[in-house]
Image (cartoon, rainbow, N blue to C red; front, side, top):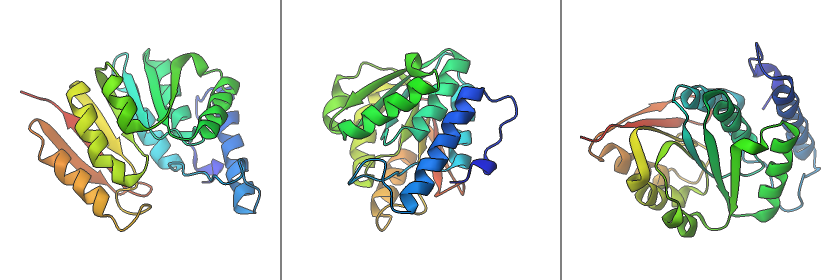
Length: 209
């Protein structure tokens, strides 16, 4: 990920500094200095970050669900969109250390009020979330894509947008992503398209009935 690829016109200065900080930490990690020992960044790229932000901003007061906080790069983009559109982000992460790091970065960017951080197994947390959700980013372990979809599908608001990352490359042999895409496209009221942005993003719109 390279900061110069990020379009910054009109961007909040704290948001820009936060993005540059991620760029520096990812570069250091590639040189052998991990942010947290035993963990690595698995962030969406800058183009995908801009895409999910644009999609979320197009919604009115969006209730955003993120599956896979990681170190908070995509959370940052979604929180900035939530602030602009009057919405809120609920983000799930299995690793407490990663979630804590993400929360610190969002606080530095002045976006912590727009995010609720939940830590634990997504398949155990999802049934307890009330919803409805207007936007969902799916970017955790690929074998969880399909079971997660089955759990959050009943919690989608009409008109909800889904974005699933790593659909072309970036996770296993692609079998899990293919199963997710097939299930999404077979869902009544769902329209979906695979975009060759970053590592591939499946963007879907849910209009039941």
